[in-house]
Length: 460
Length: 93
Image (cartoon, rainbow over all chains, first blue to last red; front, side, top):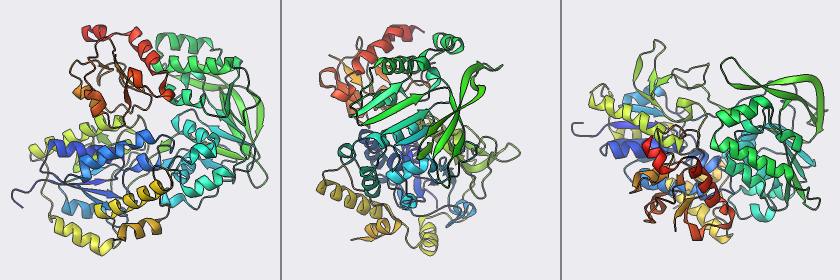
């Protein structure tokens, strides 16, 4: 193998994996990179997370494509590492393996009734409307007048918008056909969004919050009492608040000052300092009980919500979407930090239980730092991890794999994953979806099942 | 004129890399970088060269006279950002 560049496997073709591949190719033009992905399609949450009405952000896929797949990087979709191919098999064929598997599950609230039919992780709803093939069979009951969204981050804002956009607006997006059909029939008129903490502590970007106040046919309501900041928050905002936090409070005050629009067909009500204590219903969600909180400062200086009293307020609703954060799951045969839900790592070098680096194994993105930051955050994160890889290669710290060479990978995949989707397969899927989109004057019409995706990948 | 960054910014720093006059903030490493939800162009320093527009992977940058209606707040928001710290203050720090 003299003269050949280092062979690198990246596990997970989401934004973190794509940024890492692009960055590694810039740093080491001789690297031979294989991008493995559990789904038949690349780009992870850019395709399956970013809301369908935010098409401008999805343009990032052109950059990913240009910087990775249009260069020497290979794509192996529909291959699950840990199931189809093991970690130790990857280590037989690659000098370095970079895990970019993200945070695939949601955090739970830990309250009674969370498992009732009609109570969902917001991420399930997101995957469903974005045509993730594992979620197409879900059935969301949108027949009640009120839905409750728990959480004050951008996923909460996304699902709130998706529940209140008019069918006319949804039709212009690449929302999954099954979701478009269900949302057209939706009878939801009001979405109540609950925040555990106050207006100064919301995790929305001000852009997402502003958008909620500008939706066509949607009246956004905020109780003026809710935007009167408590002394702790007022002081925090003045002394430590970010530009975004100050902007958010200003926007929420503007919303609170608006006269109610009785004519609007749909409403969004933002309520703060409320924690859900129980989801109730006879066989399915009928109501949620919430309790009031106040903001206190912990000894470490963090602002926490704590309940004020035992009084419970009941909100009747037929759908609950819980959006209180993502969480990573352990990967077979790779160390996992059960407390922080990440691969234990230092700057991207995965560590063994004794704290020493596990040679040749790296992490990037949410599986490395936890589910924080926005898309571009992954670029800096990838640079940090790739720097470690490049340093270790330069220092000759990585052993040559016993069986290097792309022919070995091809043979292994031929045996284990007969329906692997390669770059050509993805191009066929992409072309098919874009063409259907052109016919319907939509940005793209997504294929939403494994069978359809794999059939399109094999089409001539 | 000037260019202005709209709310669809993903904080990819491609624009910062290509800006010849270093007028896009906050920069990676600046104290307010991590918390920033987007980047901002200082209109006092911008020379309208177009380099950032070309570099932006999500087409989030517009000439001030071409800002789409949905981002009609962007210029004012941008001005508020630089009212707190100008490029000159940021460079001196």
